[in-house]
Image (cartoon, rainbow, N blue to C red):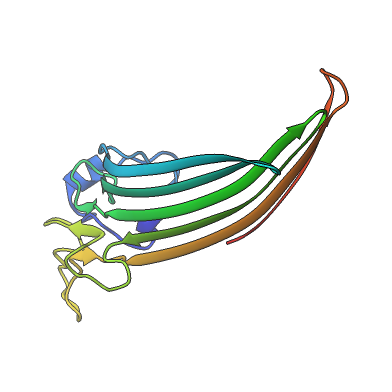
Length: 193
């Protein structure tokens, strides 16, 4: 947990001791502040289908963009000395091509899939000090250090991250109808991320 090695609240403060709620051990804590999340996004999908001598060719092209803006307590107290708020931006493009055909009792499906996803958090590839993951207010040990150190006390946690995922897959499926009630289907998929 984030607070495992970091003391957020001042242990000498009666308000801090009253706001922290733990069970039998430090791992059994209760979050007493309500987290808030805001999600905005768009998605567009293009579904094209064509009849060919080999079966129906389907092309599925998809683009998604989403932004998640959470706000939550890092110190797990009503006093909220440490507030986490980090925007996650994701852009995802995917393309699937597949051919399907049923000819009497025999059927098949073969296809390929590709996905390209980019996720940025807290500035993405660069260290952006204007986009803090966690901020600390007066009363927290990390804000008012009674014993100043060098470098000075921490006012914020910065956590930039950038993830770029490219995934490819090929798949196939064969089926045979022995009767109206009995069908055998064998499939295989291989993917690389």
